[in-house]
Image 1 (cartoon, rainbow, N blue to C red):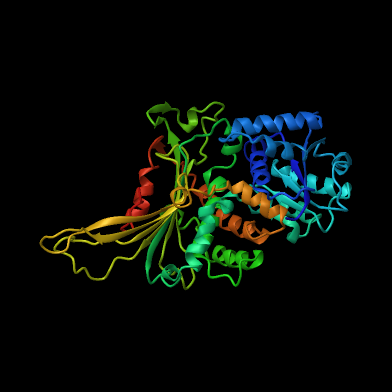
Image 2 (image 1 turned 90 degrees about the horizontal axis):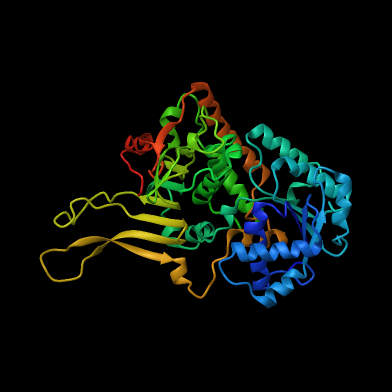
Length: 483
């Protein structure tokens, strides 16, 4: 374990309260935090060290399902400190310096704040002498709202910290099942040798939410589902499904291969956007039997908004491995169920010798469930046991549920893994600047096409699986969504 001083900028915000403090407590409980490590909350509110400790204890009781262990809490509480700082004022960062010792330990600054503060925080750390070559800075998404704003933010950070000291977070990269994609692909010959256009028909990636805006109208309406979800979460999952084998599992080897995939994405422009992309906006409907308002009926809404709450995209990857294999991405709010999954559809067999009992054999499917029930399923055909005429087949599922297969092992939250990796100076699960900017280049082209066409998003009732046009997106290719 490498000791460090962890600085939580925005320590009293929603992300820190719900995710970061509970995740750090779990790392403490598991013995993954070095004894010398200090955790310093930084925010503009006037809070003493004792007050921050009390707030952290309250957060654990509110946001953790399990009971707080008294002995673990006692160890954890001794690490907690607080510094009152206006993050836009570099001269105040000396208060942070008083709480840590950069001569003895690395400094890790976690920016759980608006992206506009990333630059000022880095400059403040430099002013306080905390931007040493042993320091690291962790940046939460989003890194901008387009390529230009992304470059502005990255440039501001880059004037203080070189790329090797910058850790950009996408919490999906900390999920066990997302990491298991690498193990499935590169540790199992069954998949390693059957993972290209010769055997795979198409791939579906779905990240569906039942929730609506939840009081975040201002943020979401300025962003939309394409920029909020596709640019980071879905494209990052796509890269891990599609990458070539990296030479090693170190940070640059994996990220080099991910960048190659992003560069191979076929551009979507004004000429083909209507054939490749469906954008939708939820209307009033029912979620689990409860009536909910439409997007334009949410509190604080702009009734004329044309921001999309749903996006479905056919993505083509122009390289040798994936020639002719479409990747269908789908994400939205107020959909029928909360679900994040990757479904790999293998090709149909060229000839069926079981027509007497099963006229049309379905293709095999590999289903990787990211949430809520993490696990892996393989759909395959199996003989029905028993005596009788001929061989009767039925579709069977080989199910590797993580909660069932690893009952004695607690599945960590994604933030636990990412916090640990940042504290241990391992960049493998973090996003490099060129990845972010290549993803924005592709997304910006879609945004520009939408602006040029002036087409409003297609309505869909809350509680459905999106606009009918998303079904047509696949049916034109003779396929359908996995429901």
